[in-house]
Length: 457
Image (cartoon, rainbow, N blue to C red; front, side, top):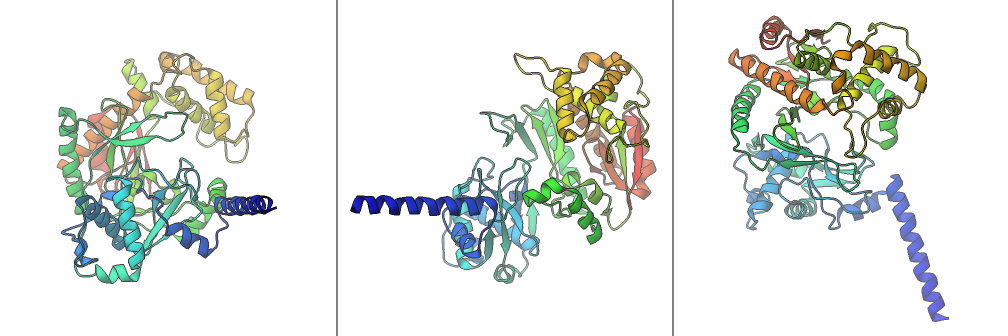
């Protein structure tokens, strides 16, 4: 009888845990559960490049007098405090969990290991300097993210001359997918003193110094934010609605793919990752900007490599065309197909095929366009671009992205010498409207590729 009751009790406990797990997974969490979740020993890890924000001349004794900390703990605490005091009104997404909020988190992306950061996070939380929440939010890799926000107590404690600085490593390697995971990993490059990186570092140091002398802003109207959030239904279901960019993060870093000879794009600047509808409100020193965008840059680079002049109307169809369904027209489909044909990577044992590309595009368009319609546009693209067809389905993005990055850095280097600030957006640059003519002349001197200008509101 006792064993039966014990079994029933264990079953009840198991059922309670399952219910609690389901509630946490679905996001229906009461405040008590949030408090319990945030007060345990769950390791936290900062994502992106935010852990490179630090407090100048920071000492842990400013917050915890008489206590001793290791160097790693002091570094983690400085980063946490810098993130809190630099924007006290905005929660920061810092905790990346494995599958859901109940299963702990991963530590591979931490700038100094999750152990010292987690120790400082718990200490600050117990002292009342920060609040940690497990909101229903997900990053682009579909991992749940918790947030941290500073309290008034932290703001008061650091109000006497806290200077936030940015001390990054300039370079990262973006490693590929592995072990069946859909995640990619950012790692410091193993040879930061390579001659190529020394040359790039010299440009970046001057670029950062120029950024320091300019005030960047992006004040997006509330109505624009509301409309953008209403459009992104998928993100709304995940609890990760598009928000106006965090303008503190204005120092991009350079990311290579697998090794320093592939890629080299800049990431991390607030204007790079934000929604297009938000980016057009970017201002430099409060002045109106323009975006100078290379037209079909990757196909143009392939034509240039084959010795042909830049082509007109690469995407076949005019920009203003009757949509097939919703706001999707044939040009939209042709653009997706062209990029997919260049970017698709053949597997070690299987070649990339038309079917792979068409299915990928259909998936992007939520299967709203019939297979035959997309196939016909694909055939038209292959016919028009026969001169570069050998690059299709071959992973030519490696060459294209590397060349694109080299061109953008060359433009940045020349602009710095003219004391003009430009903001790179992969295959485009943003500059003040008054500098448009000068930047266009710099671009024309660096490359024959065609470009177009978009004026910001």
